[in-house]
Image 1 (cartoon, helix red, strand yellow):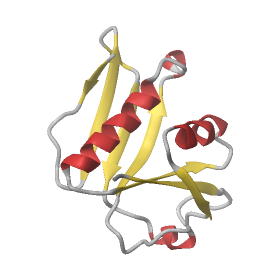
Image 2 (image 1 turned 90 degrees about the vertical axis):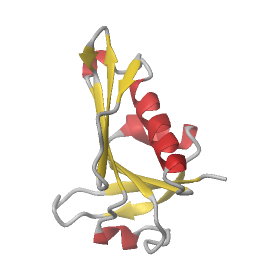
Image 3 (image 1 turned 30 degrees about the horizontal axis):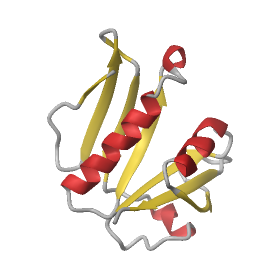
Image 4 (image 1 turned 60 degrees about the vertical axis):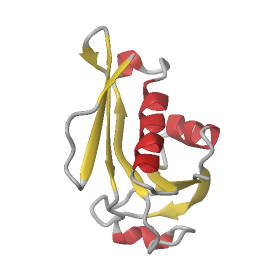
Length: 129
């Protein structure tokens, strides 16, 4: 799998893994933390690299695409001198709830997001040494 990262702005980095030339996943990496993140068990004043919009083509699921994207997020955090990674996921997304702890993320609580009424989100955080 080849991971393509286009030129970045200071706000968002995108990763687009490819299999056989086709884009099979995407993740947006940013330092923006929604105000609702204050509901989680972490310090929202601490700078962190946050993964948003993690998505994998259903035909490519189970092939390590999400893993590659999350590993890229960790490399990006190190490159930016950050020691904390954060991510939230829909409470109904069982696949990411299994993935994040396997990658060393700890469960940091459940939140709501104002722009997604009626849904609950699970938060995960990883500290880098």
